Image 1: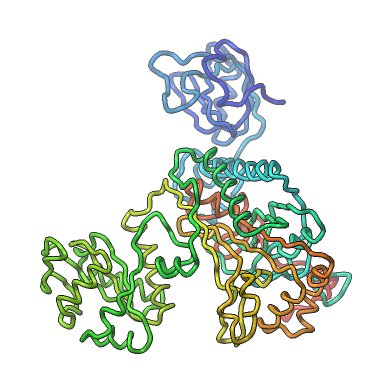
Image 2: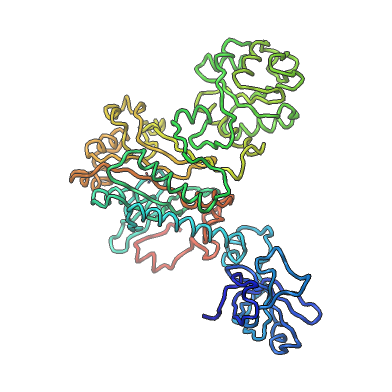
Length: 597
Ligand code: ASP
């Protein structure tokens, strides 16, 4: 080794010891002849000192050092002189008096400061990712990620799971996104698809009798990139035989608790993750991935306004729609412009408008409410009794603003769900140190696709229905079938999902049929799986967790790009390698590909 110690492993107990360290020049200061360098390696910082009086040669060489030079330094560990101790630095009580310096490599001036967490254009950070990861935040995120994944592996190993790799060059395995395709050279005109997940493989591993499988699996989905989405991402993919939903959820819960207890013991989180029915989540929070750090539950006031004089509300209810709202605590004082901003915000969520009702604190309590104390364009048309009934239903306190949406039920819930999430964060109701894990369970098996006039799988087409709902897998009744599926959610994000699978060939064929797959296409795409089910396939189920999202949330990053070593940018480009890129004509020829231009 080119060193005897990591920089940050040294302390006063090493006093007088001769050591060698290696790393980068983080910062350099010249003081009255002495040169001080903060030497940085992965472990942290160590001050190293060059004294012209004790070693002229090393000092002279040190005067040529610049930021990010890679160096090796040998010397004696010494307590810092009185008054120069740096309490902020773990190695702040000592310094290394260097008598031998080797420049292992020089460095150009970096395109951004490494030793400062200054704001840098993200594309520049991505282009120079190897410099970006010398900075503490990204480095620490990658270390944290390692720990999370390591804990997942040790937990699953202890629970008797086998880690099995599955192919990347495969056939389309649908998760509802577009596939990435790879042209075959040996079989002109045909393509491999990169897996959107190892879903079918892991099911086949269960048919193969492996019983418990996991994989830190790369998944590829050609979707638009977002803060929590990348074209390629990593899942902790799990499958188990002879299980029911509760077994999978229990295992997931125990694993996440072990990770939290070890890596985030400072945080607040439940010992038992609530199981929330999908319909309950939708009606209370307008979302199947609710942020449970705050209440602000959606309330239905359709019955209260059904007979009111405000036409928009009354007609919505008369036409089968819903009027629902959420309370924005303390927001009655919002100015007209602030209220208008919220109205515009709800329009970006697809609403036609939003009706604010400001229950000002002119009324000391809701019982003492007067029509005048409520500020809204709607008060002219609402009676005091109606205003009071709304306030009671919504548990309003004087000073609160009620945001009402009147639309079709789905739309109303969706808009209010998004407004709830946004305002919960804006109003500071979401504690960043709280981790509200929950399982959302019993999703419907299908949703109706109006355009395609067919049933779409809510989770995916391999998901099993409730046993008692098997008879509902028909064109007429499919919408009523419930599924043995579950999502795990955390603070407004879906961090994983899974289900018990269909393991009977006939049921799988029936599901494909109501989903509109013609028999020959079903056979071509899923024949291998259906055939496997004919050979004593065991009941099985599993889950997959988005490792990038889990790590992002647990380390408080605001994008999964912050926890991936080499992510794509927001336009799905690799800025370091410049990918995607054009290729040689000959390569295209080999692949039998002709480009239009
Ligand atoms: N394959 C599913 C997904 O990627 C997870 C699962 O059902 O296990 O979402």
